[in-house]
Amino acid sequence: MIIGQIESYNSEKQIGIVKSQDDFFEFDATSWKSSVPPDQGDEVTFNVNDGFVSDMLLVAETMKPVEAVKRRWIATLLALLLGFAGVHRFYLGFYKLGLAQIALTALTQGYGVLWGFIDAVLLFAGHINRDAKNRPLK
Image 1 (cartoon, rainbow, N blue to C red):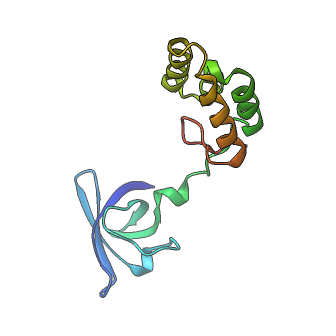
Image 2 (image 1 turned 135 degrees about the vertical axis):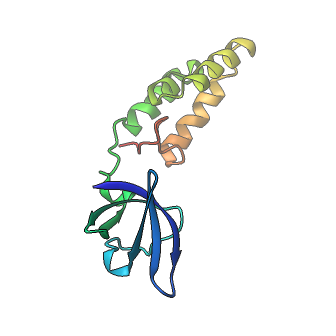
């Protein structure tokens, strides 16, 4: 498999050019295997046989889906119990936000607990639904 990027695609003629490193290859609609039409700038994988491109797929379709690692209920519980210290943000990998919550709590003599409570509500409602690495929460 070769990885490349679509440089151009003419949807009327259904032909295009894909670039891999310094090499350019022509392709047509018969070599396209993805469910969505090709577009300029798409990252693709493909094979070259006798100078012809075959089995062209979007890179996103060849990757495994992102798996959830962190649990929403744990983050919500941490936000309710230790939200003033930003522990739930540390759990989710948002270290700077966690430090900001600690600083806010220290500077406002405890009013930073409101931020933790608001985050708990947002977590419970599903508005905070990804960790720092953009993985979904379980």
